[in-house]
Length: 185
Image 1 (cartoon, rainbow, N blue to C red):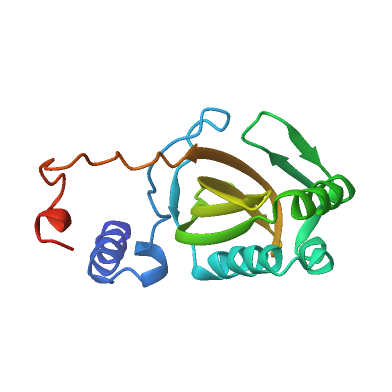
Image 2 (cartoon, rainbow, N blue to C red):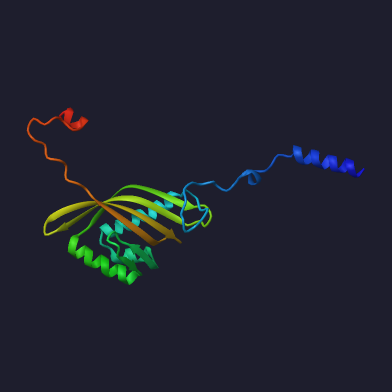
């Protein structure tokens, strides 16, 4: 009798389809981060992108109060020159000085929100064209910014920059260097 009950239990279990919850698994993810062994990443939601875009828009409007409301008290920023800004007060002072000296303007040209599978940290990596003006002369750089968003606020970010090289000067009768030039555009 015990064998019959065991056989029936195995048959019922085998024939019983698994529920969605049982078959769903944690996303596998991709990538790695050495300080967090085994961590993988997946695409996050555009809610993260929206936070970042609002943050950049506040910078373009020079709205220091809005910027301060959008970041954590312990914000940490690693600048391209190797300097580190720690905390809102230091960030506010740095932005105030930079706005006055160089009038920076940001244009975000791409963004990708991502999320850590194990610890749930949400990040955004975004490309920005940043134009500054000093003594009437404009300079444009490309900035790659990798930022962590926590509880809807910017917690920290890392800025990497690249100068945009001047296009080569064409000499008279020099052949076209790209399809647009060849087409006369």
